[in-house]
Length: 159
Image (tube, rainbow, N blue to C red; front, side, top):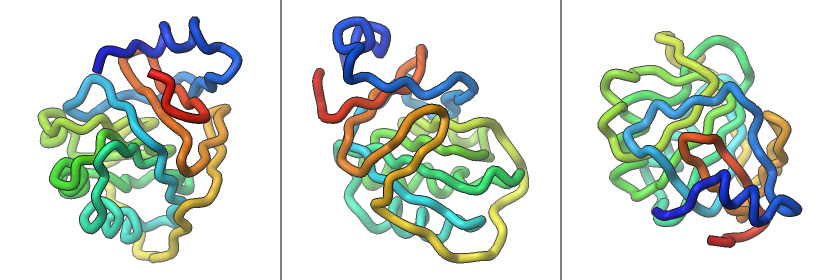
């Protein structure tokens, strides 16, 4: 991957949306890019498990919105599923865990922070819906680029 988010923002400022500060990459890939797949969770990651474990993620980045309660929705097992199914990255509007184990899995994982507690046993989710957080509206099929400078979204692949 030869892109830099700063360069994309400079060259395409009129169509680039930047995720606000505070999201950090905990995964083993320094950057990622791909078509956005959206999922909204309701206090449980069962829908995300199914997505990462059962579907081909080639060329895709999963954007996850979850209630901002203090529990983790992505850890070592989900990162292994993401890697096995070729997902480029995961963006979580929430928390993750198992940072020691996931730092070497070659998938980008951006999140607000960490929490050792796993998700609560409630099992509803919505897939493919528009999500809005961090000053960005994420739509299924848009394109996402992420690197050490941040996370950006464009209407389509531009690099």
